[in-house]
Structure formats: C-alpha cells, structure tokens
Length: 407
Image (cartoon, rainbow, N blue to C red; front, side, top):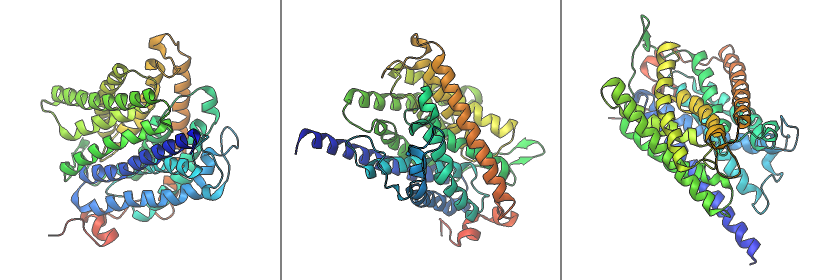
C-alpha cells in the first residue's frame, strides 16, 4: 500500500468515527428533551428523535445530498438522487463524506422537536422533519458548504453554528409560535414554569452532546493531515463549553440567588453552539470569552422568549441553537486569528463582520420563511396540534398507546 492510500484510509477512518460521534448526539438530544419535559410525553419525545434520523437518512440520501453539494448555481445544488454523484474531497470515498454530512442534516431536524414538545401531532412532525432534510437544510447549506454564494463571499462557518444550529433554531422559533404555548403555561399574563420530569437524564444527555461535539467540530476538518488544527479545535470546543456552563452558573446565582442546574446545562450547550462556527480560527482564550458571553446570552434569551414575547419553548432550543448559533457566527468576525482568517480584534477590519452578518440574516430569513410556509400549511390542512384532552393526559397514551414508565 502506497503513502497516498494510507493517508486516504486514515482520513476515511477519521471521518467515519467522528460521524459516528455526531450520530450519538441523537441520543443526547433525545435525553435532554425527554428530561426537560413531562413524563407523560417521554415516549413521544424519544420516538420523534428516533424518526428524525430514520427519515433524515432516507430524505438526505434520496434528494438532500445532491441539492446541498451539487454543482448547480450559487443558490441551489442539483437534483442528483440516491447520493451517487461524488462530492467528496480528493482521497475520501463519496459514501464516507455522505455519511458525515447526513448526521449533520439529522441534527438540524432534531433541534426543532424540543421547542415544539408536548403538543405536536406525531403525523405532522414526521412530515416537517422530512422537509427539513429534503430541502430546507440542504439549500441554505449549499450556500455555505456547497460552494454557493455565501462561500464565494468569504462567509465562515466551520462546523455549523449557522448552517446547522441556527437553521434548526429559527425553524423551532416559527414552529413554537405557530403551535402556541402548552396549556397552563401562561395564565393572567403571568408565566408558569412547567418543570421537566427528570434532570438526571437531561444532564446525561448534555454530557453525551458534549462528547459528540468532539466529532462534530474536529471531524469537520475531514482530514488528520493537520494535527495542530485538529488539536486546536478540540481545545477551543471544550473551552467554550466549560466557560458557557460556568458563566451561566455565576449569572443565574447572582440573578436568582441560587444556581440552577437546568439553565447551566443549557449554558454548556450554548457555549458549544457558539464556538462551532469559529472553532478552527480562535485561540483558547478567545473560545473562553465566546463561551462566557454565550452562557449569559442564553439566560437572557430564554427569559425574553418565555416572559416577554411568550413563545413556549420547553427545552430552550431557540435560545441555545438559534440565538447562540447566530451569535457564535458573528463572533468569528471579531475573534478569528488562526487558520488564515483574521477578525477585527487582530487587525482584520470590519469586512468579515459584515460578511458574517449577511450570512446570518440570509440563512435566518430563509429558515423563517420556509417555517412559516411549512407550519401554517400543516396547520390549515392536516393540523399540527393535538387536542386539549390529548395534551392534558399526555401524548404517550393517545399518540402511541404506550408509556415510557410503567409501574
């Protein structure tokens, strides 16, 4: 075996192993969403996360992969069914690259389920999950990772703060708004907390997501040929997560008088989401600062959506993924220093900040517009919300005929 074949084999192994770590994040999302919601809806939550990956696999294989990576225009890839056209970097099998991109597509769809938990019809959920993987995610993904117009402008989102997380977050925002709050969430203008049933599994889910992020970000190098870059991404990813959790702990302790575990768990996730765009370009110190700001921002964002505009998001998905995905993408324009990209704080000027803003707004507008069409379309056709009786008694029994907990 020659040296080229050895390098190709190592890089292929790297992509597949890190892709498997990203797949394992589906378990993390399932546990976080289940733990942060009520026991009577646990089967429904787990089922939706399972089907996100099942449907996402088929949809992305059939259509999404070609739309995202096909060489069509700057705005749309190509209709290349069954993922047979090779879009992989040189030396990597097409199917390895397809699998790695597939697990990212499934992640974008999974984000939506948490914000719409406890009151969404299962049949409607399956439909919009498919649309996310077939067309919504692949089109905006093509703009950035498929050589589209944002890539041409120099927009930088290394592993998906905007491409993956903000797309899911903005769709979650529209879905939760169209769906309306859970029964009992708001009474006489006041917000009532509806507590999740199991912080143990919620915390375990966050640890699994943290682990999976070591595939999500470092794996996006698609190669082990630059070990210093891979090591930097591991360190910046971890630093931002730790700083996010610590900042949320400190901020909530000062604000509420007691440290709250559930919000701090979201602080860790906020740090991870925020660093994903620039994990390859920032220093460890920059990652810590980004994580600290994300950890505070997620608390303010949750309060804003919960108390000010009264959009009911049971798990904080909009704040974690939508708001901090956009925030982290913007921070690249300020903190970038490594890997050939320079931000404002290191003498790079404002051009990158403007480019990042254009990309953030464009992807947000696309996701929100698609969400409005999709969710209102479902609402006025087959319906999107379960009945009052079903919601009050739990979706597990009425939607699936089986409970997660049986005494």
